Image (cartoon, rainbow, N blue to C red; front, side, top):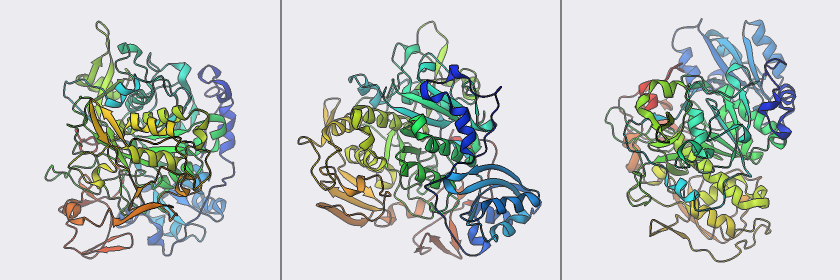
Length: 605
């Protein structure tokens, strides 16, 4: 990661708390730090080393066009970079975390770059976009989980959350005392005064940690005492580069001891152009979870078939396809406390993920028509007066109403923060795998929706807190770790709702006494979905993706784009060959590259 930092632009102690003050020097050191988590991927021909978007660029017939790419190299990266510069390329950033660098090259040079012996993979530096949509309905409501928050003494005050988004505007709901710091990666990674020219990051942060001061507590977030590190990667239009997101993740991982971040919120994404095994953004997320940081990612807002308006499958975005991430879809609570009328909005992306066929999302959460604090000087606020909400009578509107899996992701991040707060001094034992497993186990299923639409079901804050308090995480692996028997159900609005009591490990459903004992799967060194011994549990052998293909096979969509690999009339999905009669793609267009501005379809207006 390349950092631009000077005395005039960085190191303003008034913006930082405690151990965060020396971050400017740390940022400078990060560019040359060693990476203990790096791995390599080798492939064959140059075409196989390029992702789908870059192969499309090669066939577009515009060889002089310049394109930003992320080059992964486990060999002599410095030699590769020098040759790139000799050919006129510009090195944009270094990414030690994934053994890569970002550079500019001309399309006509892509094959030569991929043929470099020290190059493992070349991926487009894809544009990531905020996963929010506009909602013009007048009903004002809070996620059910926020109401539950007020019935507990927990606030998330012992937890530090990183929000990688469009920035953060200081408000009465989230003031400087709880802002750990602000780094602007859209301007080279500078430490500066917090701001948010788009408004999405402020709204997301409010759903996580706003205390509702400007609404007498009414529009408080899920964890109203949590601390936020704001990392800006999206511009005033809600778009940014993948490389900046990777740089932000890299900063968090490299300085986790100093920053103390326990959870990362990623309410953004881009189309999947390659396998999760080589996707640079997915690899960064995997490294973060390996470092013990919980990553919560949006499923995406590509659940609607643009031709029919009906739900479609296969719209998960990157990094929501990261196996280790907690990937979240949206729920419409209809602004009621009860669960009986909950639905899943049609825009919420459904699985399986492209190339790998992963069963995603993991869970769903309230994400429709949610009100949270607004950035008053932002694009979203100023261009959408119908979305503005007044918190106190006689005051100006200081809140904004938005919908999308971005909002659902923020709600889930708030739930995770509350779980860690409830764990107290034992929070270090609540690994990303364990927290993800607990969220899935305690989730409440929504009738009428399959696993590829809702995962295990809707997040259940009271259930998750109840289970957190019942676990003794210091118990040896393989031993019973519940401090007392549990009741696997939660009473909400006078009704009892059973927990899902299942975990989808990879693409297989695991059920039984998964949470009763300290399973090897919950350890920090185990990669989510990999082979693991479950002990005395029942493994349901059906593959949740392919077992019921007739449910989704004729409605696989991605907005108005087809992302994937094809071989004649047969769809090649990872190592799985699907016959033409099984998957009907419809009249969908191929993605040829990235765009620089949000479109109506991207925002699902």
